[in-house]
Length: 123
Image 1 (tube, rainbow, N blue to C red):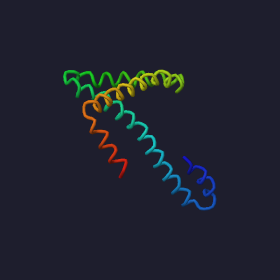
Image 2: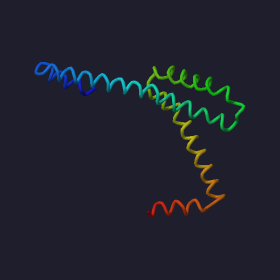
Image 3: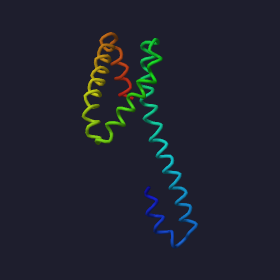
Image 4: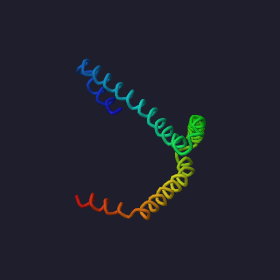
């Protein structure tokens, strides 16, 4: 995107460099758009596929739940990122709290985990 300014400056002086900058800029924009499409899809699908690990009988609902999440996100997105943040903020807080509880449970079951962590920090 920043190459547009360079293209404007070099377009009149050297058309070949201008054309090369346009090509590189289009390639970069295509990569950016591709990343914007694939990353959320992979993130949501991999998160929802955890249902399959926890309960293999729920494999058939992974795709419908993923589609539902995307539909909800895109429906809310038009109202701005603030409303999405207000809705998903508590969900993320609950998720992190669940991770903390699970982690403390594992540490209580085997405190040697802290010893291993201590060794890694010392290195």
